Image 1: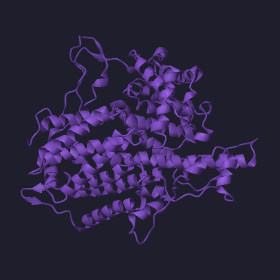
Image 2: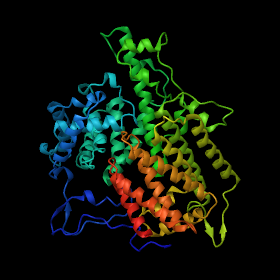
Image 3: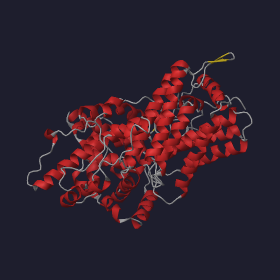
Image 4: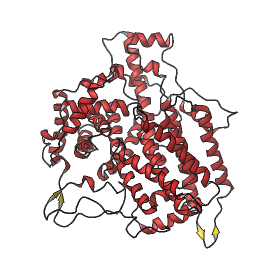
Amino acid sequence: MDSFPGNYLTPSSAGFTGADSGQFIDVADEETREWPDRISRSASPKGQRPVKPHRIPVDWSATSTEAQLARSQCQPRDTLAVGIDHGTREVLVNLLSLAHSQSGEGGLPVENFPPPEILGHFLLLYFRHIHEKFPVIHLPTFHLSKIPPFLLMAMLLAGSSHSKTNKGQFVRVFYKHCQIALMRSVEASNRFLRSVDNIFGLLLACVAGTWSGERESYEFAEGFRGVLVTTSRRCRLLDCRPNPGENENYKGFRVLDQIWHSWIQMEKRKRLGLAIYLYDCQYPALFNNQPYVSKSETANSVFPCPQEYWDAKTSDAWKMLIGPANMPPSTFYIHALNSCLLPSDVSSPQRVDDFGRSVLLYALHTHIFEWRQAFSMLNPNGFANMYGSVIIDIGDGLQTRKDWLVDSLNNWHKCYYTSCLDPTIVLMYHLGFMSLDVSLSDLHLAAGRSGNRAEGEIAEQSLRTWANSEGAAITMSHVRQGFEVTYSVLDSDAVLKGSFEIIMSLFTGGLVSWAYLKFHRGVSQEVSVDHIRRAGTALRDLDSWRISSLFGAILKDFQDVSN
């Protein structure tokens, strides 16, 4: 039980068996068991060539039925998504067709693009599942006719990922078109990515690509994350000090309306800056990759205003709330973060909403990532390097910093945890303790992320050391608590809004359970195998980002090996 089967660290790709020579194949299923950033990859069999996704006939009937059912259950707040008509669809088709024809690959088959009712359903899913995670859009002034086509397309890509019947098909077929449309638009105007709406569209496109489970989409999103962060710097989205020169012209409006609309634009900018920062923090927190935004860049960031001001439907209602002040009160990000990083007797908790509390936790994960990187310089293979029977000690400096990070997580829980908090945010709290005790790099290598068996074997050594350490039992306690929170959310009828955290809680918890089962002496095999089985099943059944199916398939392989 201490070694994998010979082909385990490089799972065979699916989708090529039983095809005749020269046959077109759909590569959609090829990557369902393969990390999107994995270096090695099986080649297509000779004589077969993958058909371009937009040329594959698409049957939208199942999604149309789902959309009809969703419309019958719409709430008053869902009326924003019913405005997509044939004219709006034509605008989107023109955007994608123009971009694709300029690339020399032919136009977009109009019959493959979904009808308006399905597009409206995808938009509805966006507002239900993603809007509160990236709360940039100002709903009281939101009009479909006024938003750029690129932003609308990015919203549809992100929303479609939560369709039960679509299963990532819309992203798989049309993401490349959106990518080309973006590049053509940037080539046509160097001011394209100076618009808050277009930058937000790029953010949503990157989010959809990162979590799509598709190799090409993931690579585009990973590359354009740098463009996104650079654009954020040039537009000073994380520097929320007022700049009157950036206000738009609202001639013809009342003075109060001008003030209100100018404030909305300023509020959108700071929300967008923090949303980009949160997305950038997902890479170290969930994917164990380097963040691009430095901590010093957030020194002048400000959290969103309290929700009641943002929800005001008119300038008069807004003014009644703020009184004689010029704008609503807000909290500086650095002050709220200090309540986590500094001793509790030095700082006090600040007023922040769920979005702000989530940003704080992700920020703590960047500190954990940096500590783990410094640790890996001492112990290159993760938790401990073994030379014969000698184990290199962590050292007082790194141990002190680890203790500080543990205190920071506990301070966050003390200052910002409440019973009414979105439970998926708490998952990042438990994931923080897991990341401190277990190397995510080793877990991912053991799961075949690099496709290199030798690296997987080295990772096993450090995982064996961790599994028999004194802190392993505490780590498993956080795994179990994370599972309890996750399953309670999935078993409830609540709208799923924290799918990112749920996916990584299930996947990371499943991997940690496997490592503990495999290497800890005297562990209950039945309990650990059940953890792996339930986590893998939940990932495969999750109605959200397609990458969950990929992680579920990986855990299924671990379960089969463990049985």
